[in-house]
Length: 368
Image 1 (cartoon, rainbow, N blue to C red):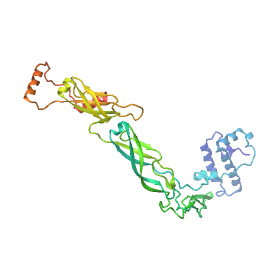
Image 2 (cartoon, one colour; image 1 turned 90 degrees about the horizontal axis):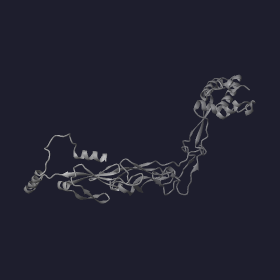
Image 3 (cartoon, rainbow, N blue to C red; image 1 turned 90 degrees about the vertical axis):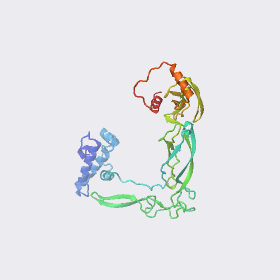
Image 4 (cartoon, rainbow, N blue to C red; image 1 turned 180 degrees about the horizontal axis):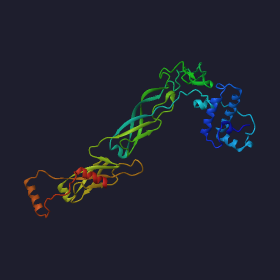
């Protein structure tokens, strides 16, 4: 028997692509529909068989081992027409069964607004969504009660219609989804009156949700299987919750730290005092040290937001703003003058440009 590599006209080191290109060229030249001669027909069989062997990595390896691997004799499988289909039409003839009516449902996205105090420790919500749910009449069967689907009499349950198409290589069998049953292989003569044969209906339902502490605006939470039910009662998609944290009048957020500004009277800043501040989860007390300046930051540990990943909480950082009185009585002015007169201070002088209070607080918050 002729050597397969010689039949295809390629070297023994030829790549798979080189073997396929050689086969394409010879198949176009020798196919009986193109070249009806007897010699061409025999050569076509040899070319096809050679390609069958060399295009399969395992068979090629066995062939390269020699006659003891089982390729020394004549004959062989000449069923190479499937390879012709693969070569010219991108894939061999495949037998497909009917497709299922049951399909996975679509995912759903819902935007949820939460207050800042709700994300300190997390919260529970009940979210109402308008989505597809399983039909309670047919339970996804799509048929009216007491009826069942019947086999399509056009495709006889295969879901495919086969047609013969003439081509350069002769008659080619093609298949396409049946137009009567749309590829399902069955038809539903009596569809469910509730869902019109869809197996699902639109409805409003309530989904309980646990929103963990530490979430932030833009974060999406995934709830598997809480999206839309698929056609014919197919697997439900997922529900995604996109979080938006509402603005708070007193507190802002930097990562898992809470930021706030506390106004302190000038006398309290000078002499020191004890401050009580109502936070998002209760009251905290801390000392204002004597001589406290504007833009100083007091840190209260573990009174911020719960970490989304891991344990513990962020801190509460309080920026101090010293309030200077603008209206003084005569007696108050006299006391201030006496206080100023008893201190030796430098006269006012230009210094480097100072940022505003909030800008300074921001920088200090970020650098702590």
